[in-house]
Image 1: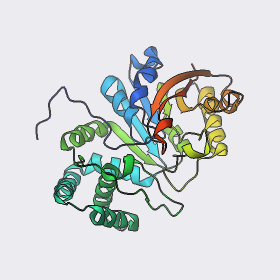
Image 2: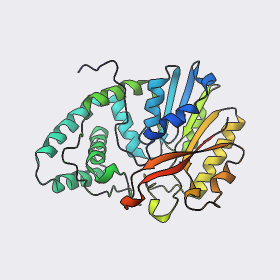
Image 3: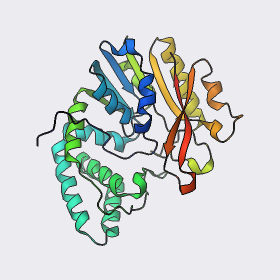
Image 4: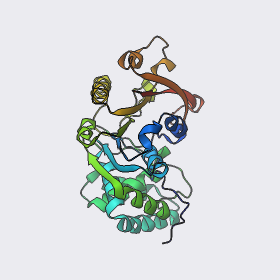
Length: 296
């Protein structure tokens, strides 16, 4: 299939807390001196990849990009898009056609969810199931229980686009210069060189009991993990690497809560507005402050 030259790759999955709307604010923080020559870009919590695709589209001097996530299913999807995109497209085209023809879709959706949770399929089928469920589940939410079982119910989309072949092929092209890792965020350090930019988008610290949407894997990212990440940022700073980190602003609920202000007190903390739509209460959906922190 022919791809128009002016088309640019965009995230291939929906992702809670995606950074598409914060791209402009993040871009303002990109150090011009670093990006004016060849550099390495590292994203240890890749998720939906909005910032990755923007960086690869916008900055031709990225010599190498390294992405990582603890979530094996997310990483498998990236790897399949890089190495087996045509096979992936074949599955999703067929499933999209079958899904659109059905009047009653629940049985079809839950069969796919059950097959996905068995995790016995080959990598391509598993990636196709992951994307299919992401496009047809409620709100595009990815959530698993402690057994690592995807448990989001069916969505109510009339004609969801399950197979955006053009974008899959664009993503495939960009991923050719990307090294894909699956593990702890600290494992990305050996990939850094003298001209490296890290962007961290960890599971956000919940600002209240009803905003905990960070169950992206069976591994909990609690306050201890947030502090370990801050220590890792200290290590990068000591080594001379530049980094940007995003997170929730707990001051939205309690102004006196200095969790992140204390954790990153020696760095630059910016508060920016972001619109968040994933909330069970529609009245609570809207703009909220988030943090963008950097060491320069």
